[in-house]
Image (cartoon, rainbow, N blue to C red; front, side, top):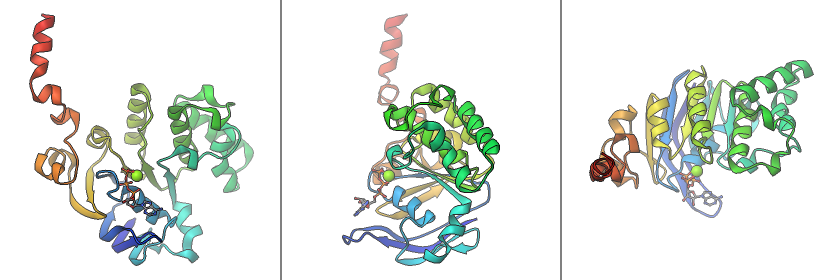
Length: 256
Ligand SMILES: Nc1ncnc2c1ncn2[C@@H]1O[C@H](COP(=O)(O)OP(=O)(O)OP(=O)(O)O)[C@@H](O)[C@H]1O
Ligand SMILES: [Mg+2]
């Protein structure tokens, strides 16, 4: 469904952000993309949607090569949640932002309303329905941005830092939603516990290249590998300094 063959991308200022990267993602696969700040996660997602076009190599979405002439077809299959929700929300109300995609695809207003109501409900943000998008908090904007993409029901879902700004309950709800979705997903994130919980495979990026890939519970525990890429193992796998240094024993001991 997603195929990247030796793709490279250099920004106009000469900075090479993706370097000879190849990757295949199967239908319905959930893939986490991790890496330190600047590793190339967001850039990689923009290449899949054609926001940026690879300077070298080829990218195929559902066998369609991503290029200027094919953008419309490519984007029919893809929905992307941007790292910054302000890049995603541009209508005056939450309802209109979430309805934008379905309306743009020519869906009838009743079907559009059904879709908006459904995603508002599953994301537990029905109370935001009539609010102005640009006046929301960071976490509220994040949830609305996710809703605005889910309302289009894309075959491939790209999520860039979907859990950032979310409170613990909203994050847990998001994790459950992502696990329940049937679509192909690529999730770029620093939330390694989310990757462990949701993804079948993880890609570790370093300097625009794939440094490692595999099953999250195999890859993310490798302290040396993670350190090489400027990362730390997830908290739940011993990356928590309190647990690691056994300080918690003292804390728990003090409570007893
Ligand atoms: N518009 C741009 N012009 C020039 N360089 C850019 C541009 N956008 C990003 N870069 C550079 O490309 C590299 C990859 O950036 P990218 O945003 O893809 O990283 P990232 O892995 O998503 O990082 P983060 O974890 O901070 O979101 C970085 O070195 C960044 O400085
Ligand atoms: Mg990024």
